[in-house]
Image 1 (cartoon, helix red, strand yellow):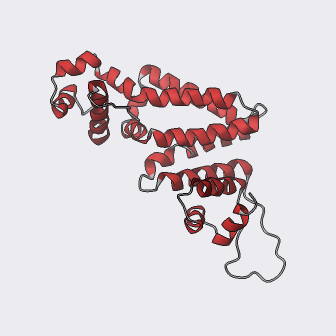
Image 2 (cartoon, rainbow, N blue to C red):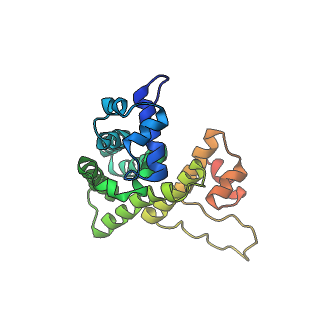
Image 3 (spheres, helix red, strand yellow):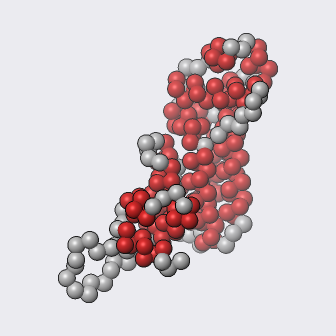
Length: 239
C-alpha cells in the first residue's frame, strides 16, 4: 500500500508507477512513461528516485517492513500462539499489500533482485520455523511451508473474492492442514437432511470475528464457511 498526501509528489510517483507496473510490467514501463502520465519531467522523477530500481524498492519496502515486524511480534509469543499470530498476520499483510504483491507475481524476475530477494528468503525461513514450532520434524516443516503458501498465493489468484471471505477461507485451509479435519459427528440415528456439520477451530474463530465485526449476517457467514446457519448459531451461542 502506498501512502499519499495531497501535494506529495513522491507519493504520486509511487502510486502511478504501481499502476503502470501492474498493468504493463516493470520491464516494459519506463521512467519517461511515468513522468508523462504525471505531466512531470523525467528529471523530476529522478530527483526522488535516481533509478527505476530505487522506485521498485520503495514500492516493496512497506510490504517487507510489515513482514519483518510480524516476524518479531509472532516470534516473541509462545509457540502455538506464535504460529497462528504469524499465519493470521501474514494473511492480513498480504491483503493489505495486494497490489504490490500482484506486481511481483506479474513479473517474477523482480523477486530475484538483490536485497529484496534476500529479505523475502529470510522471512520465509524464519516464518517456517515459527509455524513448524521449536520441536518440528520434517513433516511439520513441510506442512508449515505449505500453510505459508496457502496464506499468500490466493491473494493474487482470487481477485474476485471479497477480502473478508478470502481471509476466512485461507485461514480455514491452514487450520485444516495443521490441525487436521474436524472430528466427525457420532451418528445417533438415521441422518437427517440438512443436519449441521462440525466446524474446525479455525472456522469457529473466523465466524466469531466476522460476527463481531458487525458487517455480515449469519447467513453470509455460513455461506462463506460452507456450513449451515444452525451450525454458525450454535457456535456463536458458545461465546
